[in-house]
Amino acid sequence: MRLLYGIVGEGMGHATRSKTTLEWLLGNGHQVKVVVSNRAYGFLDKAFTPHFPRCEAAGDKPAIDIVEIQGLVMKYVDNEFAEAASVLHNVLRVPGILAENVGAYYDDIVRWRPQAVVSDFDSFAYLFAKVHRLPIVSIDNQQVLQRCEIPEPAKDEARASFNATKAFVKAKLPGCDQYIITSFFYPEIREKFRANTTLVPPILRVPIITAKPTPVAEAKHFLVYQTSKSDTSLVPTLNEVAGETFVVYGLGRDERVGNCILKPFSEQGFVDDLAASKGVVANGGLSLLNEAVSLHKPVFSVPVRGQYEQILNAWYLRVLGYGAYEETITAPALKSFVEKLPGYAKSVATFSHDANTKLFQTLGPILESFEEIAFAKELRR
Picture 1 (cartoon, rainbow, N blue to C red):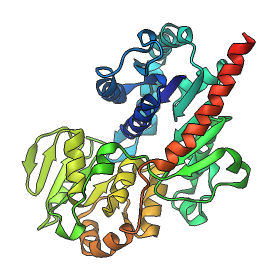
Picture 2: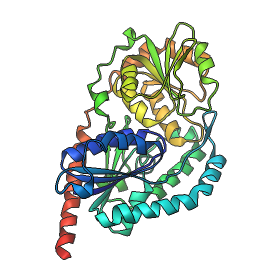
Picture 3: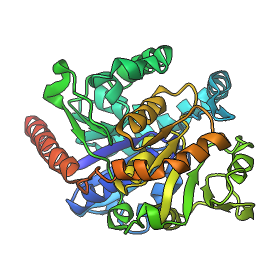
Picture 4: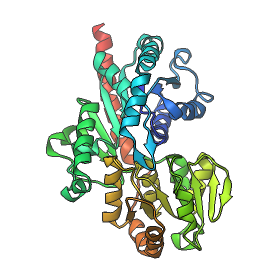
């Protein structure tokens, strides 16, 4: 089946999660054109392009093209979403974004005639599906805000942000044929959405599934992941926590500063350090939280201010006993987290993942139904 797969390019969580789904699609004989922007493009291009034929040259064999489009970029200052700066930056880029994406639309996709669409919170592929009346399945975590029952105490953490984010999510991908939501927590699906919405456990990449985690009590370091290089207080704060070692990713540096070992990005190196860690210090992005919880690692979460999705993730961490939720990283809060680590470790050890079984059991029949629709269209032609 010819599939158009759209992946939002901001951050790397969507790309690493989608890589797992793309591997499954190729393993089941599909041909896929992926539209993606920013850093995620380079990551996926390196992962797939050297190993599979291009779609136009593959005949009936599994094939994949990674098509770069222009996407929006979010700006952060001191672990806070800079709304004004982000809007200004993206407004200035709009003419170039439109020009380049129109080229990709016609040159790379229209002539290929996709039969169905998958969107990981991506608007380009979604709009293509709507314009060309193609069936579409959404696979992401954001839809939990719109399609599930969110507890009132969670809304109270940042009610204005919740309302704004829910409205945005509601408007982003309305009217998909099916929705698959991935998460380490499982709120009840709202009644009116139950017919076409499925909650699945975390989507885990193969290195996480096959990792052999060190028991928390035997581990020697904490893993730290920081998505914003503008946070200059992080390393000095970690240095105040005596007796602990922190392996830090995300700052783009390779050096040792006090008790912090700063490392450049390496997919396997990151997985190894995560599996061998006592716990994780991070923002509230779901992909890393999913992986940490699945490997039974307690999490100290400081969600980006102004991003309700991350606030909700951190709130559930705290409620489930899997870790701590703090508004800022401070030495006293980190020391408290370390002291409570045995209790967090006991709670998070109760979590179990299914190695993506439910995801693929859900996605397979959906694509089969989409293929029947595509076959019927071909007959009508």
